Length: 140
Image (cartoon, helix red, strand yellow):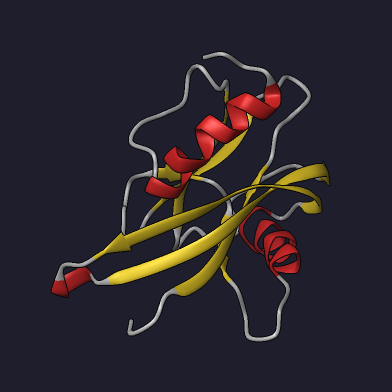
């Protein structure tokens, strides 16, 4: 990757305040838990990407709300060299029941309390948490 890639993520919270995370099956960060999201297609607005990725990965329809933060992830080792810049949005609402729609890419799915998140978490997800806890009023 010669230039940074553009991705996006979406924070989906249920009525109990639990965060929806999916477990990556593939590198980079295989086995890590993270937010739904993915690569922005050419000429696609990032809000549309966030909604599309939630539909593709989880089978749910998401109304995209406010921008929570911007994450940056980079890895410089030759074998696994990348740099991603990703806005992360809050889902204002969602419809449907989340299920794994891409089992070749993800091995797990779960709703987790912010004070009981699984480990390990992806780097972008770790970057989002302080912003999310501030916006939800969770001191944990």
